[in-house]
Length: 322
Image 1 (spheres, rainbow, N blue to C red):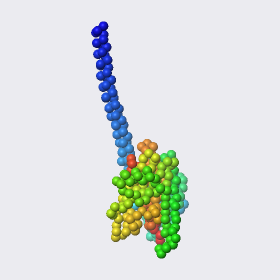
Image 2: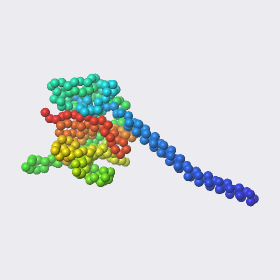
Image 3: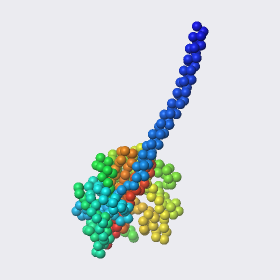
């Protein structure tokens, strides 16, 4: 009887030791597996992002059946150009296209990227084989597998509130206001930019049903200027920083003669979202933007990576008045 009791106690002791080992080691194993899965996911996303994005910005002719590459656009090689077979244009119009040729500039070209000057400008020309582009629309020409109707995110542009003050010695003054960004977004922007205070923050569009697209400008620090494009997705804030240096001799910051300010408060529709899409495979958001100035329009394609946007393509349309 005594031997049986001792054996039972030994079994209980070994059982307790085994249970302790399992409780100590198993969570560590699970944690390691989770870390490996997380690293694999990050590596997959990184490998996707390390791949070169094949594409080029362009604008449409008056009939909507032709596209021509923009100035200062990141131009693919001629071989890569022939592989560009799709386009997404201002407002989310999806097209199928085919590369035609590189056309030279005519002597009578005005150099302006207007539909009436389309045939006289230098650039890579594409023919629209399916669909129709809005006349003069800004477009992104890329590969078919990049974009589909299912990936596109609907965009609702928010109209700025424009008011004019009573005339004075300098004439009537325009005052532009937007829907505020909200206290939570403004606080997060202040905190993430090391306490740099905001001088302006306004919402310019809604993406889908829940995402808010905003433009922010921070207070100047010496000659250091900072603005940002911010997208609040509902569970994270994705930001594209736009730093600049103030040039006193030209009274310029981001653009010539801008007096070191974006101008959001005295000029409506400076930033216009053109299109957006979501890659469900890795959660990446792509955003096409147009930044309008006195002499032309800067085109940008941004790609999300965690809590930041990175610019992966650019272009420019010269549209200064004649």
